[in-house]
Length: 141
Picture 1 (cartoon, rainbow, N blue to C red):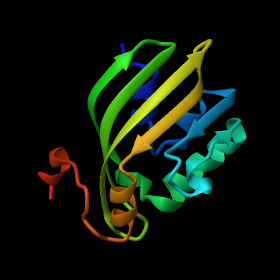
Picture 2: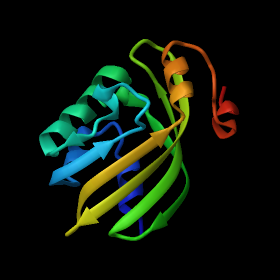
Picture 3: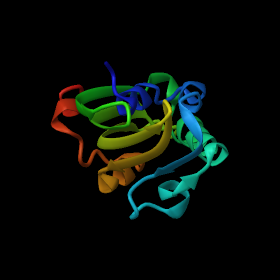
Picture 4: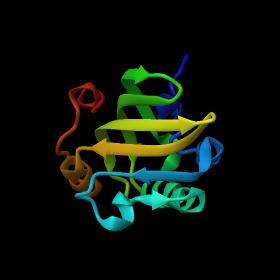
């Protein structure tokens, strides 16, 4: 059985599929070191849907995003997945960063997501600098 965390990650880029998993009171946040508009916390389904739209439609070329799952643990109520993202930014830069995503659910709907990533690699790669590429993704280049 796939955990809720894995289902979220595998839906990255598909904002409608993501929204269908959320509870009305969902909260999504990322590393505190990121700018507030990215880090959040994004509270409530409308805010999270807007955040997803901004990420997957304005920051990345959502047509070619791929994830590689390394491991997942947990159950329906609480789960975590470690994965790599391979994508292309809207600027045309290659993006290859390792992430960890935690998900909590209530009554089958996601109420909390905490997404952690290598923020230096993410920032540099958006600028076109191939810094911090996970070894599993470096083989693709």
